[in-house]
Length: 334
View 1 (cartoon, rainbow, N blue to C red):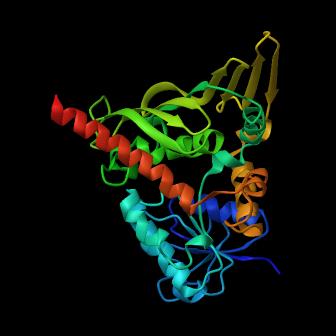
View 2: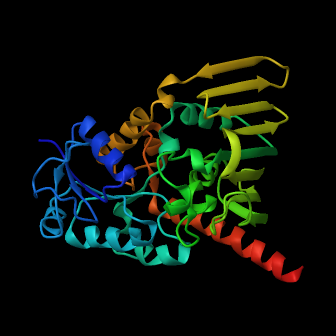
């Protein structure tokens, strides 16, 4: 019998989740936030999932193996708590968990918080898992640069980017949209401690949300990390470079390659073609979310490409909040 999955929210990411979970064999229902005009129980044309409404949606939650929360960021916590209280076996919340860590704390304090996943598809990249194995062999001090830089108007060319959630100062901005980079870097290098930050809200995009952010932080594995996140760069570039006395590791996310240069100059490069197919990546995450518990051993979760835990998701938000606070404090003292 296939697992029952309820996807709450039918925007672009909700529809992708519905389609991907169907591809991995789940029995999927789609519960839009806004009425779709179709009859309840009819199939959604774009995903093939059964449609629910505000009468049938709540009744589907208690028997769900997984509820995917793909609504607006401001609703994530409330929608996740509704699913947990109704008795859903597990919940997968889209990133970020909430606009701020403080707003996520009520979910973190829920009696069933251990049943919550947070979407983190970069963890499901084969290249990431290979990189993690290589990082595990690096001893001593190291430096790393992590970045995700792109041009926001190119994200959804068919709509005005200024009307998207990314442009909203209370829900969007690069620190929320691109929190995946902070998440995977903490998996690789350990718990972060912010040293300094600059968050930029002015720029060429004419939006109120942060358009760029540069963070400097230290990690428990004796690694100093710089992070650059922005919406204002062409062409798109995304990846990581780590340097140490033992050599250099490079992950080019756009090209799906990992390059390892040893201290003696020997170079090996591997290409992970499946990482270029977003549905394959999200399919790996979907299967792991259904098969595993967020309380499973970390190595097992990483090996399967599982999402982040709720604790991980809130920790990433705390670093983002600290970056905004550090920027504000600096501006006030200028």
